[in-house]
Image: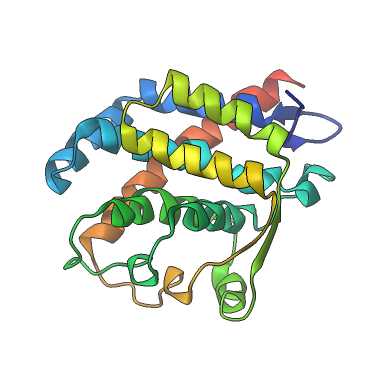
Length: 232
């Protein structure tokens, strides 16, 4: 497999493959992850293996935007990669616009689950570092270019599917993304403006996304710190 980078500079480095596989392992071993899976399965009345896979895939797919060739040419600058990550998941899953920030009256469907458990946490996982105001304004007027390095993705996705994914739904999601990138590495992605809501009132589905975002950022930050410090 060709090395692609989750991060690389003169002092430290971490391959995309190691970052993603270590995050999947970290999440599966986390008590918080497993407790959250049980709670969401019960509250949403969805099979526990499907919830397991959806939450895990938020971790596995959160940096798929980084394998854009533009980032890989300079792999210590990844500004905006999370929007590309959310865009490719949306593109592959064909999520209706009204489900990007759904009301609590929306029935639980496969598309809604992908939106609130994967796409929204992935798209906002750098909220503490990034001002999304400009990014959200740009969503109104432009497509998101994505030129992927397929050789960096397929092997990782296949290993994740074989080692970690339990459900038919989980395998379907990861296979769709792999197949789309394999067939057409240059894509114009799109996220609707509904992705960026100015309404911050409480909704249960938003609470679900926030809970996923919490475990995603914990896993991402911990794994990155351990792996990059080991390279110094």
